Image 1 (tube, rainbow, N blue to C red):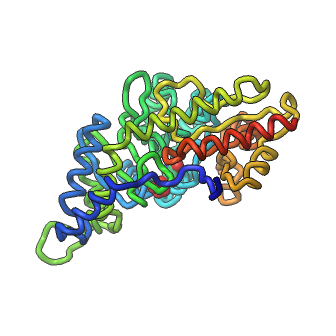
Image 2: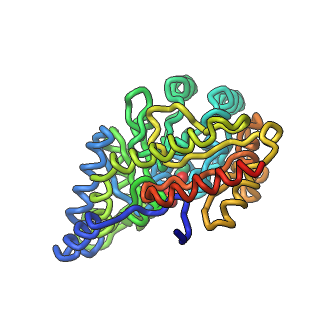
Length: 376
Ligand SMILES: Cc1ncc(COP(=O)(O)O)c(C=O)c1O
C-alpha cells in the first residue's frame, strides 16, 4: 500500500458533505446565518459553557480575548514557551509584551512553579499583567488545580488556549471552561475542523458580547455604518459552521480512534528503554497528537533518526514545537526557563495521529517503526 501518510489530516466524509450541501441549498452562503448560531449553541452545550462566539480562527479568538481583558501597550501577557506561535502572536497583536514560562517535562503543559516565579517577578516590579495564556498542549489539559490558584493570588485573569483540546477533560471538567475566556481552533489539523475556524467560550456574557462586537467590524447598531471602535472581520461563515456541526457529531468517535492509535504506539514502544509517550496515562486527554520522547543515551538512536526513516517511507512525523523563547521573532523576550521545553524539542517526535488513519495505514506506520527498531 502506498501514498503519503500525514500527521493529522482532516477527517471528513458523507456527513460533512450533506451538512455543507444543505447549508448551500438553504441560501445562507453569506457570512453568518443559522448554522453559525446552531454551531455556537452546540459547542457551548458540549463544553458546558454558557456563551459561545464562532470565529474564523483560533488565533482571532485569542486576540479578541486578550483585547477585551485590557492587553495593550504597557502591559504584559504571560504565555507558555511550549506552544504554537499563534498563542504568543495574539499578545503581540494587542501591543502587549509576551513573556514565557517553561513546561512540565511529563506533559508539555505549563510548569506551575515557573509560572509562580514569573508572576512573582512581574508583580514585584509593579508591571501590569493583563492575562496568563494557558495552552492545553497535545490535547491534554494543563494542571488547573495547581495553576488557577497561582493566577488568582496574583489577581491575573486566565485565558485558556484550548485550540488543541476540544473534548478533553481535567478531573472530569471539560477543556475550554477554565479561563475567563477560552479559545478553540477548528484549523484543518485539529480534532474537528471547519477547514479554518475558531471559537471563544465564556460564562461572562458582557465580555463575550464585547468580543462579538469587535469581531463583526465593530458596527454600531444603527441603520448606516457607524464605528466607535476599530473592529475586525473575524466571524465564521455559515457554510463552514455547517461543516463544524457535522464534525462535532463525530467528535467522540474521532477521539476514540485517536486513543486507539495512542494505545497502539504505547504498545509498540513499551519494550524500548529510553522511549516514553508524552502525557501518557492522562485519561482525560483527547489524544489529539501522540508524541514520543527519545533519550538517545539510552536508546542509541535519536528522534530525528526515526523521523528520517519514516520520512523515507512517505510517513509524516514532526518535531515537538520549538519553544517560543528560542524563536528568532521572540528573541529578547523575558522567560522563566528550566530546560524542559528545550529537551522536548530536541527529543520529541510526533507520530501520525489523525482519526482518518485506517488500519492498513496504521499497520504501515507500525511496520516501518518495527523495521527501524529491529535494525538497531
Ligand atoms: C496551541 C494553539 N493555539 C492557537 C492555535 C491557532 O489556531 P488557528 O490555526 O485556528 O488560528 C493553534 C493551532 O493552529 C494551536 O495549536
